[in-house]
Structures are given as structure tokens and as C-alpha cells.
Image 1 (cartoon, rainbow, N blue to C red):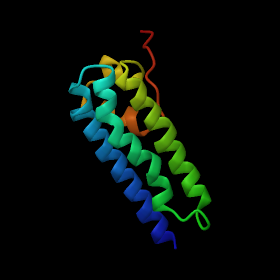
Image 2 (image 1 turned 30 degrees about the vertical axis):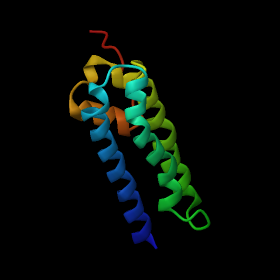
Image 3 (image 1 turned 90 degrees about the vertical axis):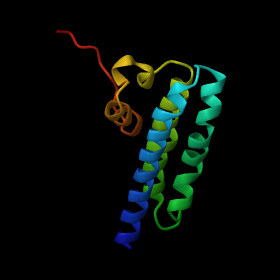
Image 4 (image 1 turned 60 degrees about the vertical axis):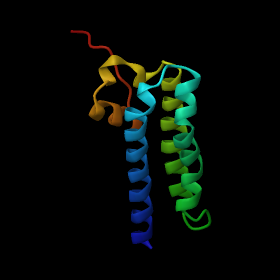
Amino acid sequence: MIEDALTATGTAFGVAVLSGLYSHCVVRVAPVGLPRFVLSLPVLIVFLYLPNTLFDYRDRPLHIAVSSAVLTWWSSFKLIAFTMGNGALADRRCASLPSFMMIFIFPIMLTRSTY
């Protein structure tokens, strides 16, 4: 039972990492606007359906809620803002792959340094 939840959580994290790699390598090179949005549609569709396919809603409603919040809300909206040239992912401090992945996957924001 716990092994199934850990496997599904690991699968969701793996898909998020692969989606972040795709977004950094493919979507980033497209021009801002509609071309970038069209290239990001596969990631958005996967994020929409992934939580419901990994977990049984009768047995694991909390897992669905958490993975939906992380994937469907945070990462998707960051990606949509990125396609329009806005948001944390479009910041030039986020140009390297590690920083892009951290911002894309985890619910963190860049702040301006005061010193």
C-alpha cells in the first residue's frame, strides 16, 4: 500500500522533471506568445491528467490533492506565464537548467536581493 503511493509519487516527480527539461530545452527557444504556448501544450495536458491516473481517488484523495496542487496549479501556471514572457521562469536569473528546474517544480519564488 505504501509502496504504491511512493511509486506513484516518484512517477509524478519523474514526469515533472522530464516536463521541466522539455520546457527548458524546447519551449524556451520558441518566440514568446502563441508559438511558445503551443509547444507547452503537451506538458499542460500531461499535468492535467497525471494526478487522476496515478492515484485511485477512493483510496488516496490526499495524494491526488497534493499532486494536483503541485502539478496542475503551480507548475502549469508558471509555465503559462513563461509562455507569455512573464513570471519567475522568464527571469534571466532562471536561465540555467538547475535554477529553472527548481522554480518550475517547487513552489518557490525569486526575490530581489537588497545587498
